[in-house]
Length: 449
Ligand SMILES: Cc1cc2nc3c(=O)[nH]c(=O)nc-3n(C[C@H](O)[C@H](O)[C@H](O)COP(=O)(O)OP(=O)(O)OC[C@H]3O[C@@H](n4cnc5c(N)ncnc54)[C@H](O)[C@@H]3O)c2cc1C
Image (cartoon, rainbow, N blue to C red):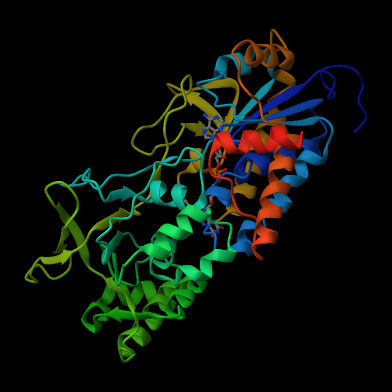
């Protein structure tokens, strides 16, 4: 589209995107395509882009992680900037962004975990999935995870792909992780782990589990791992039969679990046990996790199952955290919105939008965020001509960041860090190895600059 020099063209218009995960970067692509903005700035708390594609998708799934190449394309445009290492709400407020940009699209995802709400949840050795995942993917703000020295049994609560990822990473031969992007101190910790049994615990049955087929098949094909399933858990009731008839994934899960339940044990060094129809009632231990009690959810007469375990990971769903200055629905962990327009007490907050997990909750695959971002971008474009002109411009935000001493990581900086990661990966004969701490990331950038 031609610029006509008025504010109905792109002249002078600026958009800010907060969060460089898939949702933010799909929104970026759509906003670039619209040619309605002279400048689009992407603010990101981490020193690197891509959100959970980098700090969530399992390191042993490099093909999925490679979606980052597609997501990077938005930054090829000269009118787009990356401002990494800038946490909105801490380094600059949403209101300060609103003062400098016509539209602000927030896509900060979900950073925390839902809680089980049971005794023992805060004992050392009990983690949320987001903590364990942040650790093994090398997120700079990850809580240090220490696998217990006496670890023989780990328990993962949850029936989705995140639970499968964690069970797989804990159970698989760590030697196979040496060619992945996983930081080396994490591979070393996993290699030193003496775990022999990983228990996956699901509140309902195989027909209701949210596992997807490739991930299940992958689990069943792990070297050195036997799968253990109680055939009694696989007996289907009428509701299960209906779920299997209607849902391809449910059928695959039931079929795969049946096949596993019939496999003879091979005496493999590690086992993954699937416990369906169980919910955790209590995590046991005085000073650290020593066990877990699992109540039956289907057969009320079944006894409570007590498993000795030294590590408990709850993978029952990510949960958003409020961004200061934005309305927040605590129950859902999302920002209330209509067609992506942020709502405060039911009224639209002019010029502020939300997309991705923060809009709809932690559901769907990476590509789901593209449709979501496109929808939200349509709202942005529909509103654009009627939005109030911001009192200032993006330079005012640059100035604030400089005054506050924020070390902004630019796209050129990120490319330097990325080259370094690639070089270390090449030297090890594998994928780029993630630099997991901010100080080292900044040193690498400065040394290459
Ligand atoms: C463990 C795990 C594994 C997954 N594996 C797969 C998979 O294999 N395949 C698949 O299709 N999907 C997978 N998913 C789902 C997929 O990752 C999500 O659908 C997607 O990442 C959600 O995108 P988002 O942009 O909404 O959030 P995110 O990816 O979380 O991106 C949000 C971004 O906002 C940034 N941010 C947060 N707060 C601030 C702030 N205050 N200021 C600035 N920036 C901020 C974050 O650092 C992050 O970069 C996985 C999810 C998880 C949790």
